[in-house]
Amino acid sequence: MELWSLQHIKTLIPAILVMLLLGAILRLTIGKKSEKIRMIPLKIIGVLLVLLEIGKQALSLQRGYDLYHLPFHYCSIYIFALPVIAFYQGKYKNTVREVGSALTAALFLIMLIYPSLIYSGANIEEFFQDYFSMHTVVFHNLVMLAWVLMVALDIPEFGKAAIKPLVLFLGGFCVISATMAQLLQTNFANFYSCNIPPLENLRISLQGVLGYGFTQFLYVIIVSAVTVGFSLLFYGIGRLPRQLLNKMRSANKVS
Image (cartoon, rainbow, N blue to C red):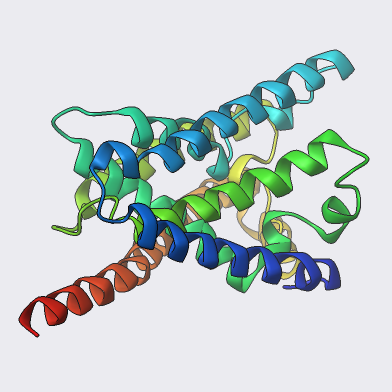
């Protein structure tokens, strides 16, 4: 089980450094501007994600559609969530942004720990030869950048944690994704089989003891719990930088 490939070390670390630098620059230049100005970078990212996905779906149709390209993966959430975060201005915008902050923080932290789970070294090597490989690398890096910018530009404004909406949102996603995974026998969000070899071997071995149906039901429940639980954990971790920035701001005001 390779957490980091050599290709990830060569490309992801520099990319993260660039993201942090860009976040620092934007905080210094537009961090105190109006919300309308501060939202522009996120609007650009939201539009880019949609355009990338349109290209992916069109190419898949052209080549003979692959069911794996349907947007029922965990990361497919960002195709819909980030444009909503960027453009929604209604009553619940801060709650929507808090949920979005949790989701983007989760991906950022997973990429720090286990980037090979998200995309492979082969995807990086094929970046300039294959659209799908380019898509997965650019897509996930844009989502990581979105979280950096949300922290840097105080989006959302730091306030009450949106734990209940996050749990409800992820619970709904798990129901839809897990159902489609079983119906189409396609591994959306790891709900049909596990990408981690030791755990997949365990799932298969349990089928002989518990039967396929019960094992699969139990597996889906566990994956759902892990999906929600880890997102909540990463949300808590992801709020720490904003807490630190707020403390620094308060200290500057006092001094």
